[in-house]
Image 1: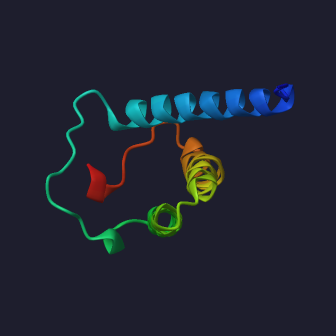
Image 2: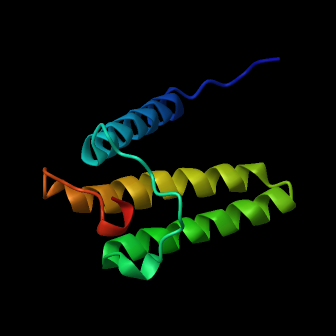
Length: 110
């Protein structure tokens, strides 16, 4: 049996993994070496507009994932995660922080 190998798809996933790597490095650099997450849940309404927006998009992605797991729709789950990471977290949220190269985490996260 032959397996079709789509080189463009492989290249696209390579770019996706590279974007994940760069986003993680950017976030770690912005948080600093001594970052310790808070143990208490913070009120999301204390964040900026872009922080609240990305939390709403994350909530929607989680909703899609929960629905997909419940219906055994694993392609739908992976698509929801992929779309959130690529198009909302990386392409909008993190890019909005690139203007300030000295990015600091939002007050409710520090």
